[in-house]
Image (cartoon, chains in turn brown, red):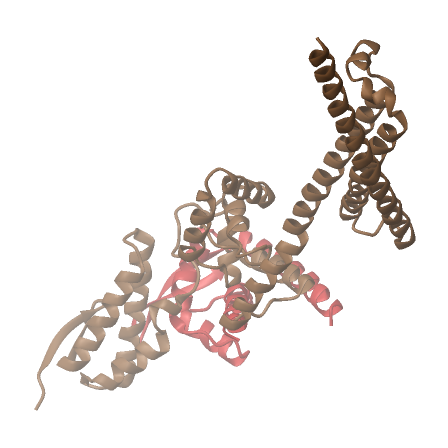
Length: 342
Length: 108
């Protein structure tokens, strides 16, 4: 035996089994949940109730059972599937609020910057630069980026994409979106595909953007510093060889005495320092230009010059030093002798 | 594949409005169940529930209007017809549709 209850649908009375009533109740409640409380929505619900009433009457039964309710709710469908918008007050100029999604159509790492760009109407490139800039002042941008990445949903369906850009979802918009997608080629994504993409994109980002930057900075640094030292060294050489004031020369008399050795030492030393600098300069230049700018043959020649210079400089230097020291010693000895004579 | 299905669903949802306007135009005066039948025959399968908010929106946009008609088999029914604005809109949609077909097919 079953219990029944009486209901009133669209001004029509029905006797209905209790379990059927429960099912119907639940469905109507879902409807109310789905629609808001505007007048239009109420009208929609009334229309649907009319439809249900029509169905019940069509069964010709004196008591509506569970099956009848199930049938009509299946025909009507789950409210979730009712598609696009709840009717809105104004018609044409309805602009949906923009929603923040991650935009994976135009992404470097995860589409965070791109999504932000869409939402605020800024070029994503500027946002990316801002993120990278914060890395230099404490890296909080990285944390922010990761947080956004985790909490922001990806724009998957075309309606997502439209919501991301803030366009109302209408036939013409979806149509133009389909056209564009057909042009660009739809991207199929599932979880592993996405992960793969992340890795690829990170790699590409590093390769395309980061590496060139590092390379540029490094190469430029090398070129500039070696150039600086080469010039400084040469100037220094010039000063020592030709520019020592006559006054000082009298004090440092050993220089004029052993001018040959002195010159050889200095030049040898110069070669020994300058040639590596020159080689580094060319290496730096090569890094900047991303290719070898000095031939191996020339490298060998430079190396040989360096060897010769260093050896000569070394020998001359030692000889020079020995002479100077010996002179100093003999000068001292002479002074002692003179002192002793007195 | 899920994104593909979702996309297909979205396309169809976008086109439903077009189809509904076409159906109303075809029969001049129809009620909801009739529209559903016509769509079913043309292989445009949707749940009937979709029609209600959709028709309500079309009414708000002044593209359709309805008349109440008494029915022997139940409560009074709304019979929908196109307004002048609705006819114009339909004309535009048809044009959009043609150019869309051209675009897509040119990519085959």
